[in-house]
View (tube, one colour):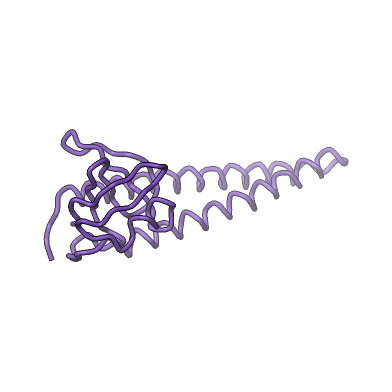
Length: 152
């Protein structure tokens, strides 16, 4: 088990991104529920029934988004950045001759000490290309051939 400050910072970045999404969805759900309470007080006519139905649909959609975010939070809990491995897996830092990747969640790029790292999910197209790769392996993604220089 080895400490890696870059991995720690990238994992913290991923967690922060997901936490922000989670809080935003929770607020959306709370706002919808408050609106539903207001609609319940106004029970006159079809206009209010339509508004209530739309709020219910929005509530269901927000609930689905919340479930997806909770799944992502579970993936982050399973991301072991301290386990050493010769091959790319969840929690790996993969340096290629073109780009640097952190296999966790697809939350975009993050610079650490002036170096850009792409946070990618294992089940994303590039994550699937990276999965199982070792130092010296090559792969092609978006018509760009890359060679793995290092897996941490």
